[in-house]
Image 1 (cartoon, rainbow, N blue to C red):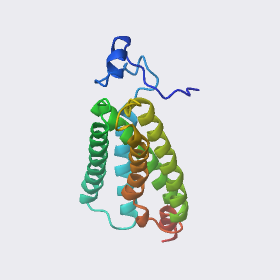
Image 2 (cartoon, rainbow, N blue to C red; image 1 turned 60 degrees about the horizontal axis):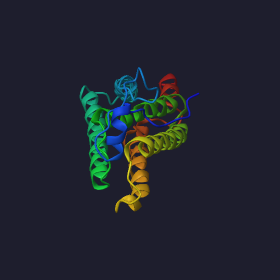
Image 3 (cartoon, rainbow, N blue to C red; image 1 turned 90 degrees about the vertical axis):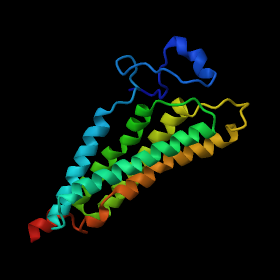
Image 4 (cartoon, rainbow, N blue to C red; image 1 turned 90 degrees about the horizontal axis):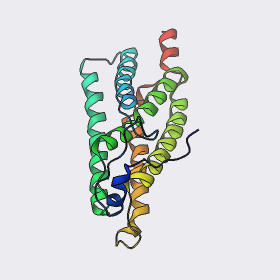
Length: 199
């Protein structure tokens, strides 16, 4: 079990990173904590298909649903990345690789898929319980990742006092995004699968 959250940098970059410049992290083959885009991309595509299926079982599916879900997810994720990047700049922290932020903010699609599948089988009440759990765990994940790898601020910096509120704000964006992007309103109280069988 890996209990360490810190990314590994190349040794020649450590001194530069402490000075506030851009860091060069080791690739996934050399660092177990390196983010990947496989899970975010696959869960993103799966989420679009699950939402389309639920819309279809409710008789609300149109081809536009695919693009609607895709653009809303991408738009919100872009907003998250922009807020985090601007926040890092305001904190005078070392800039983080864009793809790392894309991957870290994209893991929420796994939670979104879990929420919708739970709601599909068990109903809207179970969906909101799952949302509370996945939203909390995703927020904790983002908090630990950002605190240990991205929001590095020197203690003598004027922006150090704002570090903790900024970290919590960035992390809480994950909970907000899981709530906002979810399609719980399209779930029946008894579950979509139950509703289809009864009809």
